[in-house]
Image (cartoon, rainbow, N blue to C red; front, top):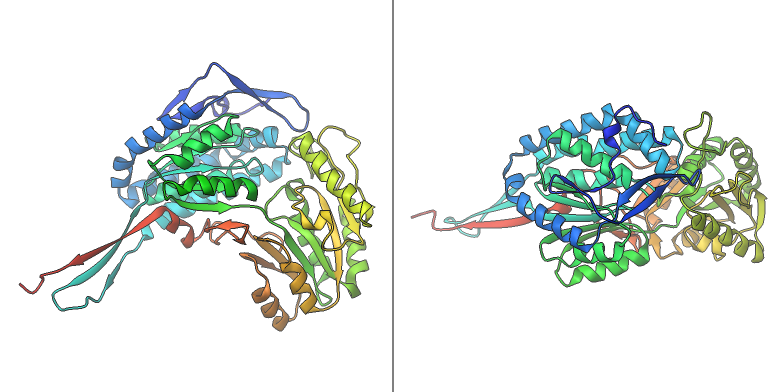
Length: 485
């Protein structure tokens, strides 16, 4: 079971309009490391989503009317509470999601950073004055909160995916509804507990839990009272939700699938590249949207890089994320593990070679061996699909031009990484890659100050940074006339 310093953080009902809404039906939240049921959570539905929208709409005028300083003070309390309870929040996350406790606590700090950032950024929502077309006219541009915001978030980062959306929305003066993944609702409900403790008024921050994602999502995407919808998840689901939003002409932001190339040139610092690869590929057992998905390695250093990576991967310790010394946890479900293994087997049948791993782990359950594959081509299943598991397929290339073509040969364009020490090459490749984010000699690129998002089928909009608050604002133009009379 989950043992916390502050037991009240373990909630199991939807949080709507400042109240915990108990339902007659529940769903189980299980620990992916052990299969043990952690909690039974109220199974919300479309009616609960409608109630959350109504609550957010009712709370909007008073929240939007607060000054940026007033909202910032409340958000700062929320940030401080998150950091004060970092350990407990990390324990909850590890229990329901499976990542090692150190990674979970790191995510709490990362997620809290967005609350801290936007507490201040909300004070810098600047308008404009524009020279008028005549001496008796003045043009003024205001930015105002867009209104009620609804969001759906995934299970792989169950805290930071919420704060990355909620913090700019609340800072801008919007009210917010979140539907968290049914695999990991406890982290969202713990954030709601802390939001209440921080003094966020009722109706301003709402959490609807439930397994009927279709019914809840339909309300959030089709309600005329929701002005902005944000989703992080798979591209096929994102396309469907985007279509559903069209009827009410909502502003939409989507952070969808990825197929990130991790590129190693012949002039790279190979030891640094291996460390970057470990962080980018194997963090959260490979279950991140910006994970390195394909390793494109220049042929002259291909074997050396593979040997160094294999030695490093051998050091991973798999197990329950709460256990001392564990550096990689399980995949989220048995199905997720089976899907990863199917990609490996398909690629082996196509001619790929497993260098290390390639099988479910001896621990059983949802554990999969950290894996490296060679003799992979860019068209094989393991390279063409988003793996979402701890598998590194290595693909050789010869020239820079060939590399750019291979890296861009995908419908996705979220993140890319490359290692080189040639300044000319760095600029050429960075500008040639069709991706929204590029890590150069760096395997971890996400932070609150940077704009997170992709191009092509990887989504719309940006989260984080000064740009991330713009999606939660409407521009209003004022034309003042008759000023000479």
